Length: 248
Ligand code: UTP
Image 1 (tube, rainbow, N blue to C red):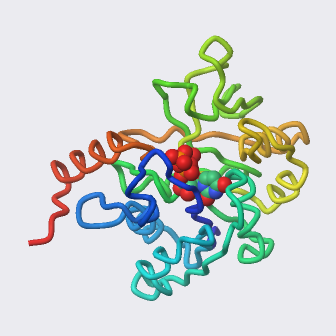
Image 2 (image 1 turned 90 degrees about the horizontal axis):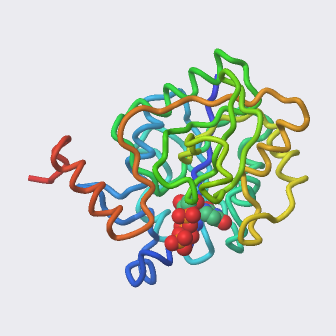
């Protein structure tokens, strides 16, 4: 049973400047809650009770906002990623908290329509007894995502942000994953890739090369990877129209 998780939140959020000069992207509001609090709430519907939140050295705002985790019935540890070296590197920073257990990962800047997306992903991972389970959706722009090549529900190849003509499908990773701890070994073997960063996509490709069981789960409904002001406005419009989310 998955009881631990990592939320990477150490990015620089340059596309949301100048707000992110002062406020971590993950603390910008969607309705009456910070983006990352929506992610934490999705974990509340799972068995996860300990989360490593990966922050950059200048992001103490996240611990000011989220606190110890007590108000969510969980325990949070704040782990510092010294340099923005990519998602694989951010996940590796949380290894000591995970301590050889299975775990889930959810990016701190993603917004989902359903609240069950993490519960469903984790249940699928456990049923499949997979080494890695990747949450995917049909994406409009393959150049913004890690794209998978699938056979049945097995992932047989992955490419980070391919050119449209090189994309093996339109199924893109949407920032939620479940792993056995062997992913940390794969991350240690990962070489810098796209933009010179350690890409989690490349680490999962190593698992495939090792013959490990990597599967995917399609997540239905709206998903917004909040990178720009337009994304933030879209997430807010959706949330306020559909779920209320305004303090009265
Ligand atoms: P993004 O790709 O959106 O990058 O990261 P970013 O740095 O936040 O934003 P831009 O590109 O500068 O505008 C996706 C998620 O992964 C985390 C980010 O905090 C964000 O939640 N991340 C990314 C890390 O924690 N560490 C990294 O090295 C990279």
